[in-house]
Image (cartoon, rainbow, N blue to C red; front, side):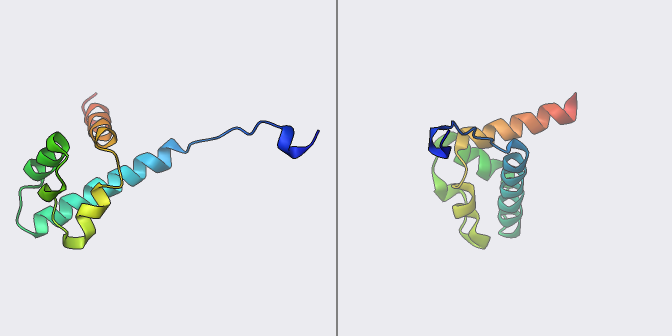
Length: 86
């Protein structure tokens, strides 16, 4: 059988992805704090509205947070909350 005839299986490394999302959330949080903003309020505004203006450009925070879909950010926050409260 030729290699092109075989079906390849795609493996998604969920652990690495979750770690990346957590790192981005942490970096954005730190950037917001450094600029004197309330990080929770600002990130909530972004997550609810989708408006990146809630996140400053400081430390590339705006670009970082836009690398992850908002629903995935919310999912990661919820996952972390549940894991830490159960």
